[in-house]
Amino acid sequence: MNIILVNQSENATNGLDEGNYSYFSWVNDTGGNTNMTEIRYFRTSTPSGKKFAITNSSNDVVASIDDTGDLFLLGNIAQSQSSLTAEKKSFIVTNSTNDVVSYITNTGYLFLQGIIGTGSVSTGVAPTNLEIRNSTNDLVAFINNTGSLQILGNYYDNYESP
Image (cartoon, rainbow, N blue to C red):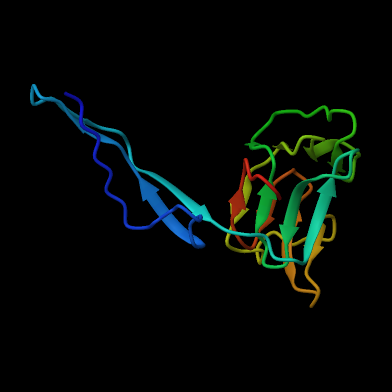
């Protein structure tokens, strides 16, 4: 006989409140064997109404950075790419020598020559950066000349509606 038990602290029938969550699976069979997966973490968040949005050719939003510095992507992120050749119809960022250092595809995938940093935008500010500022002119994100993205908030990839 197989028995499945679920222990949850939130009723997710109508969705989860914004916040941090974790989950794992643990099994114990009738022979006394047990196993457990790694603990996985995720955060739920909703983009604010004010955002820098990147749309595809159908005018669907595929990526956005909101006024708190959170990044939302329809796809996911590829960091530390040695060289980049942007796909057609991408949002492309080049450096001062016109080399592609970052791009977001028509389907919401972000490619960076550098890495993504979260939680601060106070280090690495330079006149060659592509800066994203909110409605009060506060810096919430930038991409530097080497293709690293720094955001004030967090990033959410594979997000259903960025």
